[in-house]
Structure formats: structure tokens, C-alpha cells
Image (spheres, rainbow, N blue to C red):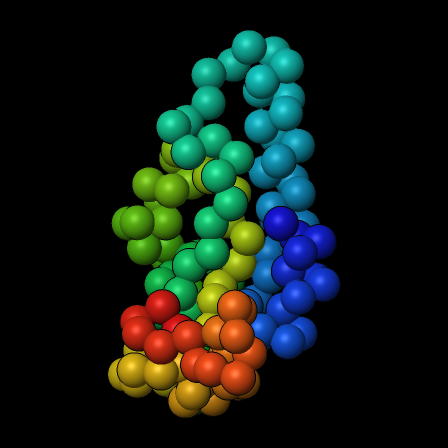
Length: 128
């Protein structure tokens, strides 16, 4: 997935931040657990990207706004704690309309997102 992000995201602009090193470290940890027959969570190795309005401790959370461009989350959201407990691999933070207040995905302060299936269109909806 990280290779695909590197290859395609310059056009799609879906990720604002990619946690490449963290993701690779988590994958190695899961490989060690599996080879040692240590139980893993129900989301083991599932790649996850979260909107950049959800806090992950120590990571930048911008809400798609220049107002928060350098804001570092002091805690992780409960949803993130659960995702981590179940051994998912957090790939990064995805783009969104500023403060999640748009409908098309065209008003992020950092870059306009495009529909990955047709780059002439906006992704639309809350997932933009």
C-alpha cells in the first residue's frame, strides 16, 4: 500500500501525512508475532487511513486548515486506540474539506482532492 501511495498520491492527493516508518515497523511487529505464534488483533495487518480531523498522539492534525497546520495532537482519539489495539496498520492521515465542512472535497487548505476513478471529478461526500 505504501508503494501505491508513493506512486499515485501525487495525482490523487488523498493523503496529507503518510506514516511510512510507523507502518513498516507495525508490519514487522506483526510478522514477529505471527512467527512466534503470538495472538494478534482482529484487524491485524489491515491498512487504515484516517481523516485528518481524528487525533493520533504525537501526529499532526490539521482538519484540512492552515489554522492548524502545525498542530500536534496531545492524545489519541478512542477510535484510534481501538484500531491500534486490534493491530491495524495506520498508513496516515487523509485529506478533507476544511474542518470537514464541505461536500465535494475541493476546499482543503493543502490541496484539492480528485476522484481516483476519474481525475476530472471531485470525490464528493464526507470521504473527500
